Amino acid sequence: MLVVLFYAAVAAVGCGDSVDNGGTGGSGGGTGGTGGSAGTGGTGGVAGSGGAPSSASIVFVTEAVQNGALGGIQVADRLCQTEADLAGVDGTFAVWLSTTDSSVADRLVQSSGPYTLVDGTLIANDWQDLLDGTIQAPINLDASGTQRGGDVWTGTLATGESFAGGDCEGFTEGTMGVSQCGSTASAGSAWTEASTPSCSTQLRLYCFEQ
Picture 1 (cartoon, one colour):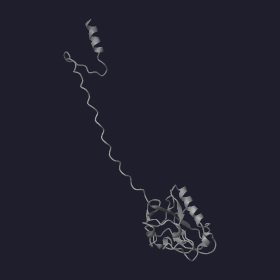
Picture 2 (tube, helix red, strand yellow):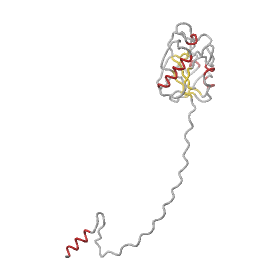
Picture 3 (cartoon, rainbow, N blue to C red):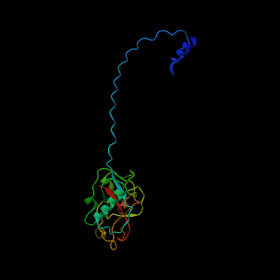
């Protein structure tokens, strides 16, 4: 009978319960106290303000090269927009190109903010800085960020005025005449006013966000 009683006592101890090898156990503990009220959560901090949206206008040089028969200014604008779209660059773009009748200042937005390459490199602090005879860095990256060399049709002097010596018949003529070009290697006035090649020359274009 003693064996049976001992077995029953051991079986009553559950898995994970401690076994007291001491003497006779004392009385059970008193009634548990009432739990305290949950504390009120603290008020979250004010979310920090994000950085101000960039007001920079992107500038790039085209991958494509073409002679003076661009199809006119509006077609050249579309070429800029197409290259920007294909590269995933947001915004509206227009070509840096003057005819003898219309300068870039007549067509393009004259930004009061900075001009940068697609990688963030500063080109000019604003429109006035763009036309003061120098820029901060050459415009030598295309819309995808690939470096491009060579010259660029501009029809534009360093002052932003039209080149009066020819415009390839409004940039529709690719065999006869000359116009102004700029250089992607220059951060001086030659960025837009480098030389006057024949309209048959294959050159790139500059594109400016509007």
